Length: 592
Image (cartoon, rainbow, N blue to C red; front, side, top):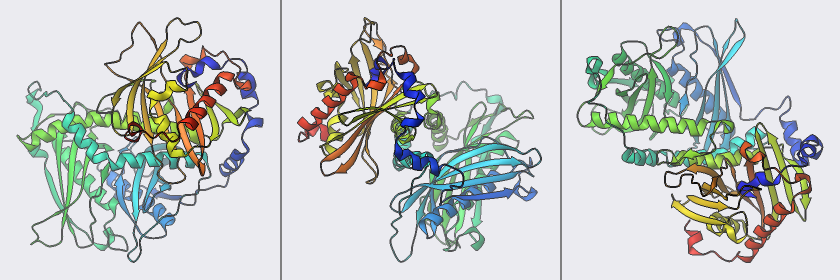
């Protein structure tokens, strides 16, 4: 079982998948109907806007500031449709702009609530452009925004989203992991910047095209008027983002002496409200210029009266710009010369943020089929690898096309063939509390007590309370004389609400201290783990998932349709382990 899944799957695969339609679980029927023609998410809001000259910049392209206002408005309407009361923008995740939009084209924006928490919601937004003459469409960007519901006279408790389609189940499940990442984002970035070592190239740069950073500084003030605010007098988040984009574009233009293009906005939070009558002071400066891109930092502060000495910090953001030539290729930019002190600090932090951004974009946005089996582990990507680890398992769980292949003594085996992956899922009911099962199976060092495929387990690094890295040795596969070893990241999560399972997710990582040796054949797993659902008093549904990669398929040897005794024996041994140790909550388990 587990990473050795490929050692148990050959004869019978054809019969498993040829009878897929006839053996789907009946519970999936409703989902397929939901995805049929005519279904529309009740929180979905669509906006279509024709891009007019008044919406464009100097290049005749839609101003990103205007696009941000439309995005925020559409997302807010979706949030308010679900909440039934006014909502305000709390945060916006990273946005990467894939295409520009020209005058005369149409912008189509679609927003829907992915998940509701207590008083906040995650809203997913998709933006596409449409050429009315050629009937072509392009994806422009995707965004995730958090909105908070607000009532003046009563506390808000949002209702849960009704999940009908596979996509809705996936987004709902992964939204909890994204929320977790947002809550620790500020502290994570602060720690990474403090520990990230960036080579100082100030001395080696060509100074002939160097621009002092102070020459790019911009300061502008805006008076918040009623058209800039909602019916409660709170400034639209999209309006603030548009003003921020304006000053950032001016700062970038002062460096390159051209019309820059905004390519990305880093995740940011609104730290406080702004009202009609506020004066917003927006400041921007180029923090660093790389070969083909530059980072611009923007800060927004608010005050009510000129006599006020204290200003409220509303927001800060980092925006990445490029300068495109006639062939839409990025041009080489001048270097930036930072001011001593804070300027040099911002310069070095921008270099660190660039690396963090690239790691985050690659790991968080990468499709599962594009992820390498084993990703290098280092402090700059550990938060995002943990996120990817858990979200990959949750997406696998949410799939609705699992095929029931066999059942023996209430132990069920499901299979799923998709793209280049073959996945399996085992399920059983155990008379153990879900939290106890979660704690017992969280510590992989106890795995050899019930799983003979784990010969030895070493805890390499306890990363934090919920993440640990293990070195695992397994017996040799088939005729291979060498035993296998794995370096595994195990990430565990407690449920956000009573609809969520407890989760233990596992995937391969690479550590410089545990490289492949001649003693073992290095094995890898891209996605595996356990989910535990509370089914009643001292009753838990235990499910194990594993995604078999192409490298394992050559070891396929056993008839899946018969539910090999190897699978069954191992999973029943897991059940007995849980029953024998259900009252064993040692301090080492509680402090994991």
